[in-house]
Image 1: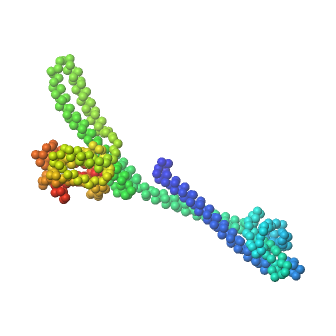
Image 2: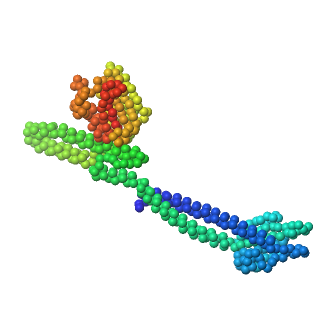
Image 3: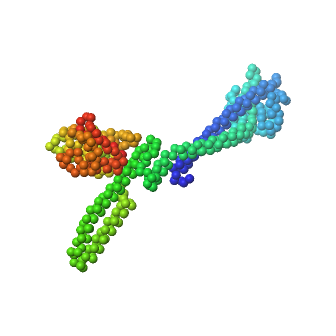
Length: 448
């Protein structure tokens, strides 16, 4: 898996998070188990102290006597790990269990009567100390310090066993979670792979735009890509058409020049002929170059609201004698992914036609994020007028270049057809009908 792969980066990031998480979980669980084990050990040692107190006897002369058989047989076995000590203040040892032969005990400082103190000794033993005044009902009671110690290996062995089990299961869980994360990432990134495959299909000419079913989070990206593809295709098509028109326009002058060669002096005929051939070659070369590459431009979003306000201000001056009332229902900002010139061409032609046909009113409105024919568009531009509208049967005709609904109105009959062609190239949609509010013509422009 390549290091620049998005899936690789996500897996590495999640792996690090899981490693840190499981390390913290292991530390917390181990510390919690250690605390619990120490508390349990303290309770056991406290029971051992009570058992020693129950077995001890004090003679009338104040001497402390311990029986030969103690409650826990480990007290009688040297090196058993359980050790008992009884000291008389100040630090005078009066008894120790047979298991504690050769061992020393550390006495805590300032231990009050009937107070317990649990310590971890330097000899890696846990010790519980208890101070008692005995006998309590005597006029001259003696103070004794009873200590019971147990080797730390009993806690460490349990902790080591827990660590082995815990780390094994945490490793198994981590592997399972990483495998699940890998599967989830693969499933989650499927839409991006589908977009990449569709883009490759567009490059190979098998598709014209991204038409798959994509998640809602990617619809904005898909819409922008489709708009960019449509606009680039429109630029290429227009570039080719313009060059084709230019080449066609040059054919007639070139033919005339060829026909006039005989009128030139003989010494100039060869030079003029060479230049004409050279012009033919240049035209053909530029046509082939345009077909192969096209013009590349960076397309930015344009504010449709600003364009509408500028066009309406200009048309107010052009049709000053009609005193047209413009009703603009537009948002403060309406970004459209297109060239500014294309938007001026579309909006300007339709608004100009509305001004030509209207009586007094032209209404322009924008609806954001409309949906039409299972497609999402950036905006719906609606232009209405209170004119006579288009006669029945004439709508399809005016979409053709050079056709006009009324020959008495000045124009070349190409405005609406240019708008329709531009919208087709951009991936938009043009619809015409009757205005419900004004009664005249209504144009609905779906912008990609």
